[in-house]
Each structure stands twice: as structure tokens, then as C-alpha cells.
Amino acid sequence: MTISPELIQQVVRETVREVISRQDSGTDAPSGTDGIFTDMNSAVDAADVAWRQYMDCSLRDRNRFIQAIRDVASEPDNLEYMATATVEETGMGNVPHKILKNRYAALYTPGTEDIITEAWSGDDGLTTVEFSPFGVIGAITPTTNPTETVINNTIGMLAAGNAVVFSPHPRAKKITLWLVRKINRALAAAGAPANLVVTVEEPSIDNTNAMMSHEKVRMLVATGGPGIVKAVLSSGKKAIGAGAGNPPAVVDDTADIAKAARDIVDGASFDNNLPCTAEKEVLAVDSIADLLKFEMLKHGCFELKDRAVMDKLAALVTKGQHANAAYVGKPAAQLASEVGLSAPKDTRLLICEVPFDHPFVQVELMMPILPIVRMPDVDTAIDKAVEVEHGNRHTAVMHSSNVNALTKMGKLIQTTIFVKNGPSYNGIGIDGEGFPTFTIAGPTGEGLTSARCFARKRRCVLKSGLNIR
Ligand code: NAD
Image 1 (cartoon, rainbow, N blue to C red):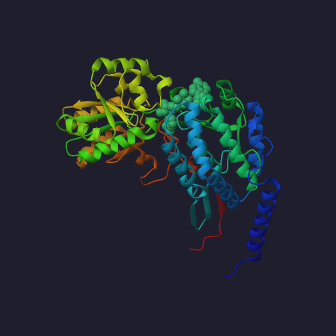
Image 2 (spheres, helix red, strand yellow; image 1 turned 120 degrees about the horizontal axis):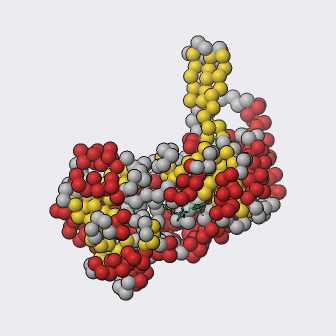
Image 3 (tube, rainbow, N blue to C red; image 1 turned 180 degrees about the vertical axis):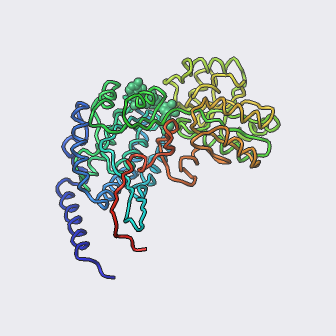
């Protein structure tokens, strides 16, 4: 094979540039602001300058920068720190599951391979459609997956050629700033333009609003509850809204009940039920409900039996139609102790039987309390699953070996993710086929977001020639 002198020159140029930049900055040396700005205008302006410089970088450069992000975010000490510090700062979730989620985000979020060019060639010439960047993207991130979302969005957005301004939840400020700093230092060491990934010292609703209305921000991506999704969709800009869910898990009488029980406990206890995708209520056909509960209790569940205790807990952990943030993502044993019960310290999930209209069923709790509702038959269970999903079109789970019932539920529920016979996290690429994402855009229809969702399609037409068919 002959290698062209141009290619050799290019590789040498890039290697020299990388070595020089590594020497200049050192792998963990500060790079100016490290992407942290005192005010939103300066942050957006800096990201805009960075994006213009980024346009001069090659795809090979992009891949190198993305690899640097993967490396720093998957470094074992950093994974451990991120998970521990997030649990400490937000008071939500658990360390081992956060390590797992961050690792998946770092290693398996799709990169530039996701932006595939389409082409037509024929008598009239060659036409390509390429995924081109928007420019500066404003990304709003949740408390529930703060670092996972930053890693996942950064890789996808940079892979598509953008710069990104993050607006994190104030309750996850310290860890988000730490991560943005780490990413900036890794990018500087890899020779990337400064300030491709920025944020502000003091995240706030005012700063988020300033970001959303800044003329240099060309696209908004909101990962959070209904308020912020509505805000970005009302902004007048191209927006991706990844909103709330309330995923039901239907179990019918044809399911492998022992496996369904294990899968549901695994999914619903994942990161103390924080993921928007995690099972939030079980609708079980009456004839198998006792067996299902019996099997669930083998996997670290603790059953609440007294209705008065359940109602007391519900009054504590909900505020109207919403979860009480003070209890979101808390460990199961701690929640039990709030109502005077002493569940074993390693309890994974509190389970209880309640009627369909109970707040445990209707409210997106995001805590390890999993209500079970008895259903007379699978058709009713499917109808009630559709109702309790509240039209979010987010995630649903079903355990069944009846293909017709699975198909019926899939058609009726219309969720972005429908997991059959597995724990809910299989739906976001954790231990399931498909890539991982932490921004699941149901309302705006992108689905599980990746680089191509953060890009504009642009057509280039060359009239005549270059058709060799
Ligand atoms: P949240 O809506 O309270 O906050 C999300 C982000 O939006 C934060 O950065 C917050 O500061 C900001 N924000 C909220 N309201 C705002 C407003 N009016 N103006 C400006 N900024 C505003 O959500 P949370 O508690 O951090 O996260 C949990 C919610 O997010 C749940 O409803 C969950 O289902 C959802 N979520 C969805 C996805 C998804 O991919 N679809 C992923 C994670 C979380």
C-alpha cells in the first residue's frame, strides 16, 4: 500500500501539534479559566470563539479530543470521585450505580461515527448531505444525573462539531464545575481550542435564562422536568426537550415471574430509582401478583403493609403532583425510618400494594418506593399503564411471553423506550443492545440523543462529474 506524502505530512503535523500542546499545558495543568466564567455572557462569547476555532480542526482532531474526554471521565479515581461527590452534594443516589452510569457515558457515548454522510451520485453529479454543527449549544442538566449528562452531552455535541455552554442545576454546582474543569484540562492537553465546554461559577435560573436568550446560542437542549422543557420549547430557538417520565412495568400471567421480579428490582433500585427511565410502578395481573411479590422479596425488597403508614410516607415524600426533593434518591432504609419502620440497611426497594389512584403510583417519585397495583387482566393492565404514563411518551416496561400483548402495549403506550423482559436500564444501553444516552428526547422526538441530533443537515451539490458508476 502506498501512503500519500500529504497524509504523512498531515499525521506529522497533528502529532507535533499534540506533543507541543501536551508540553505546553501538562495533562492536568489549568487552561486559563478552565471553562468556568463569572457571567453567562462571557461564557457564551468564549464558547463562540472556541467554536469558530474548532471549525478549523479536522475530524481526526475531533476524535482525539473526544478520546481525551473519554479517558479523563473514565479514569477510575475520577469515576469514584464523581460518584461520591455527587451523592454528597445532591444527597441523591448511590455510589456504585453512579460509577457505572458515568463509565458507560464516558466509554460508549457515540462519537463522530454517528454523523454519517448520505450521498446521491448520478448523471447530474454528486450530492451529499452532511451533519454540520449548530455552533454554540446551551445544555441544561438535571440534579439526578448531573455528571453522566455532562459527559454524554459533551461527547455528542463536540462530535457533531459544536461548542457547549452548560447550565447545571444549582444543587449539583460543585461537581459539575469540577467536571467541566477536568474536561477543559484534558482538552487543552489534547490541543483543543480553549473553551469548547464552558459554564458559570454560579448556576441559577437567571443564568439559564440569560443563556437561553443569548443570540450566539443556536440550539438548546434541556434534560429535566416539565418546567425547563417548556421553557426551551418557548424560546424561539431550535430545542431538544428531554422531559419527565413515570415508567410503568406491566407483568402478565405468561411472564417468567421469577425473572420479572429480579429485573424489576434491579431496574427500580438502580441509583435509588433516580433515572427517568426506572420502573416507577408495577401493574401486575392478579393471578400472578402474589408470586411476583414473593419473588421480589427474595431480592432485597421490604414490604410496607399498613395502609396508614403508606399514606403517611406518601404525604411526606410528595408535594401535590410532584416528588418532595428532600426525599428524591434517598436510600430505601432511610425512607422507611421516616415513618418509624426499621428496614435492613441494605434494603434495595420498599414495595407495597396500593390502589391505582395512590400518589405512589401517580407521582414520578424518583426514590426507591415501588407500588404494585393488581389488575384483573393484561388488557386492563395495558390501558392503566397508558393512563399512568401521563402522556409523557417516555419509558415503559413489560414482562410477558405473549407476543400479541407485547405488541399491543408497544402500540398503545407510544413511549420512546419500551423494554420487554428486562430491567429498564437495558433501554438506555446499559447491559442492553444500543448506545447509551442520558438525554432521552420524547417531547421533541429525537429519542435517545447522540451526535447526529446535535447537528444540522446540509446539502452540498456538485453538478456533473464525480459519478463513477
Ligand atoms: P428540574 O426540572 O428541577 O431541573 C432540571 C434543570 O433545569 C436544572 O438545571 C434546573 O436548574 C433547570 N430549571 C428547572 N426549571 C427551570 C426554569 N423554570 N428556568 C430555568 N431553569 C430551570 O429537574 P431535576 O430534578 O434536576 O431532574 C429530574 C427531572 O428530570 C425528572 O422529571 C426526570 O424525569 C427528568 N429527567 C429527564 C431525562 C430525560 O432524558 N428525559 C433525564 C434525566 C432527568
